[in-house]
Amino acid sequence: MASEDNELIFAFPEFKVYKNGKFERGPTPTVPACMEDQETGVSSKDVSISSKFSARMYLPKLKSKDEKLRILIYIHGGGYCVGSAFQPEVHRYMNILASQAHCVGVSVEYRLAPEHPMPASYEDSWNAVQWVASHADNKSKIEKEPWLANHGDFSKVFINGDSAGGNIVHAMVMKAGDEKLPGDVKLLGAIYAFPYFWSSEIEEKVKTNDAPTFYYNLWKLVYPSAPGGIDCPLLNPWAKNAPSLTVLGCSKILVVVGSKDPLKVGAVKYLEEVKKSGWKGKTDFLDIEGEDHCFQLVNLDLEKSKIVVKRMVDFIRQ
Image (cartoon, rainbow, N blue to C red; front, side, top):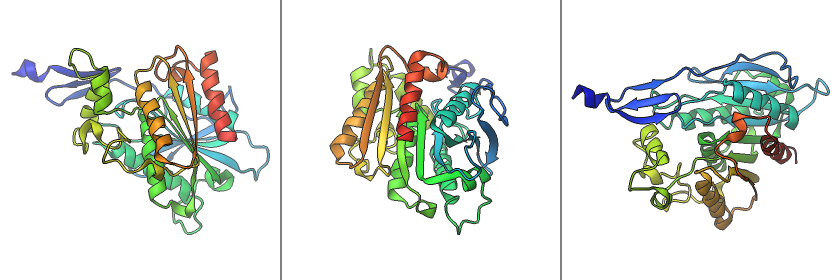
């Protein structure tokens, strides 16, 4: 029985789960914030949003002391169970985006499953969106962060996420369409990069030998109590019981995929359903031929990675 309890039932890079409920997460490499990034000149610092989670902020070189900048909220990926806003690749990614899009960046360090049961990651991300918006509310009692209070243009707030972070972006945009943000702030645009969307229909189409796919098992692991299971509206936004996608609370969206990414099927389906829903916003789509899941984070110096970053920057700056 002891050997059965120690049976490995799920494996992710640097993350293992055993039948007895125990899990192992390898150390996540991190880098500190810095006053001036050598590559981009962007400044960064860490801030506490609540007692539960934090964020890393980014500020590009200002053209004037009173300059107002677009705001970019970023949600990292990692299957809800690994990853960090402080990882070297995420830190460099945000430095580059903050520099090229000339925006204030807020990269959310949300709590991870399974030690923080879902939907903790969604709750933290929404609290981060509310925290950002609170800086536009003169009645807010929060201690305002100067980079946002002095330099944020709250008419140009964007949200971006990779993989599981791309899924969280959808939930944030839906919530922003359903609930009023502090200061009556609106999300202008949302970027879904290699987003994690799945469904029982997709599962049946792609699984082999009747074995559940990695993406099915991942959701069952991180959110075992999800209403509707694999067809929970958080994972399957086009499920029969999901709220109408016309609720999406932004003006435009960009969906980015790689042609070799197994998650492309869900991202394409999502975009199709958004268009069919009657949502009045603008949609944009980028499919990078020959590339896999979140390849741009693995190597930001690739020419194709630069194409992804440029499309994101153009989306934010237009």
